Length: 382
Image (cartoon, rainbow, N blue to C red; front, top):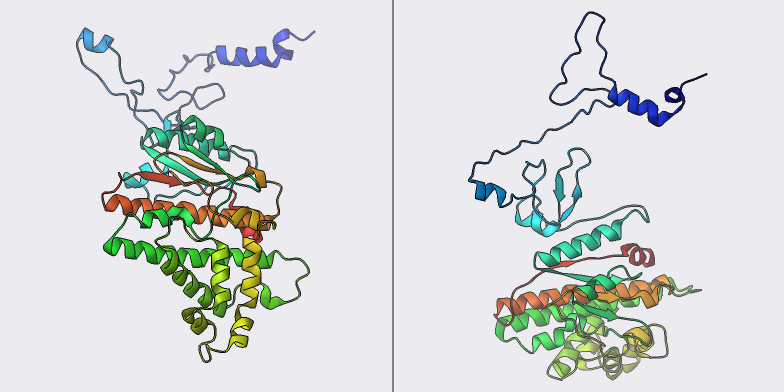
C-alpha cells in the first residue's frame, strides 16, 4: 500500500522542501551558500541586490524609510510598469523620460505583439504615468475605443468622429487657421508654409485612398495622384489661403473644388503651363480632381459625411486628447484609413502649432506623447 506522500504531488513537494540536503553517511550536511542551492527548491538567486546601510536616530529610523531600499539593476527613470521576472526589481520605462535621461537617442517607442496579450493595457499604463509626470497624451485614432474612458478620467478631451457624430476638415488640420491669426512676422510665415504643405499633402493622401478603394476601376491611371495633379493642388491651396486666410472660419473642400472650377491664373499655369488660356485643355486637366473633390464635399457620400464641413471640435492640447473613431469600426479600410490619415495629420499639426506659439510666448510649453494606434488599418488601405 503506497504512502500518502508517495501519491500526493503536493505532499511530495513539501517533503522535498522540508527535508535537508543529504550528505554522505560520515559527512555533515554542507552549509547553504549565500545565494541558495542550485537544486530544485534550493532558493537560488540569480542576482542579489546590494543593500544600503543607514545610520540615524530613533526618530529618523522609526519615521519611515523609502520603500525601495535596495539597489536596482535597471534605471529608475520613467513610468513604473512592473517588476523584473529575474530579480524582482522595479522596472520603469517610457520614451520621453528615457530620452531626457540619455538612455535612448529618440523619444519614441514601437510596441508589437499578438492580439489580446496586453498591448493596449501597457499603453494605458504609460498614458496614466506620463500624465502624472506632466505630459499629456494625444491619441489621434482610437478605434475600439481603448483610451476614451481613461482620457475622460484624466479630465481630457474626447473628440468623437463618424457620420452624423463629428466631422474633421482636412483643409484645417490641427486648427492651424486660428493659430496663424495669433502669430506675426517670421513665425507666421513659417507656419503658413507648413500649413499649405500639410494641406496639399493630406489632400493627395485622401485622393489616393479614395481612388485606390474604388471597385471595378480598370483605369490604372486613376489609382493615385499624378504629378500634374499634385502641382495643381499645391498651387490651389496657397491661392485658397491668400483669399481666405483672414476669414473667421477656414475654407472647406467645397471651396477648393470651386476654386479649381473657376481656374485662376496661378492654377491655370500649373495645369497648362504652355497654353493657360485654353479652357478646354484646362478642364481636361482638372476634370478628375473636380469629380473627386466633389465626392469629398458632398455630404451625402461616405467621405463627404466625414470631411465635407468645418471641424466639429477644436483640439485643446492643454489636456489629454482622444479621437474616438469607434463609430467607424465596421467601416471599410478606405474610410478608416482616410480618417486616420486626417486625425494623425491634425495631431502633429496641432503639436507643431502649439510649439511655435510657446516659442513666441503666447502659451506655456508642454510635452506630449502621440500614440498612433491601429496603424495596420492605414497600411492595409495603402
